[in-house]
Image (cartoon, rainbow over all chains, first blue to last red; front, side):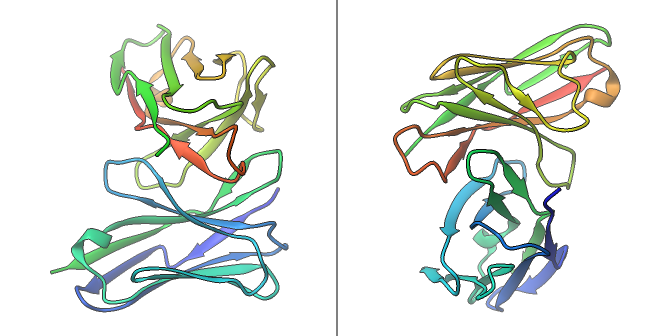
Length: 110
Length: 117
């Protein structure tokens, strides 16, 4: 079935450094969604990208959808301790279900 | 924003007993709810898709007779883990799609931590 991969699995950064996580698929994605899960919490929807080459920003977060719609990235500028958590990408198969990537666990050292 | 609640938030039960977990959309109607399980430090694994008024669709490898799902109304879905065993211990999370929304977003409940002794 459809698989969504993410790299890196873990990332440790110093507060103030930038962070990027990548999401890849071997097949064309209908869309890509990004979620953040704080330690001990539940996933929270961040954003959805649908169009090829789409770029969206939320404050320090920049989301990109590849031209071929096979990859996506989430970039955080000047990380803060509040950015700690696991970032998941997911594809929504229209009318069917969601397929989640394995996630990238971010830790931010103060 | 859309709120999804789960009850209980945690439960400890003995092996062989059954446990029911409720998932409610509090301020919106959800025609579709999803049930996931998540092991420590791992991603969410979709177990089943629950549509109001119809039978749930289970993912491959998920025993439908063991994980009973009922979606009786537009705001409530339940997951019953029957004859629970220690290997069923996990974090169970539900999510719901807003019927009135684009359908792309799903809102997650806070999760239920099940421990089977």
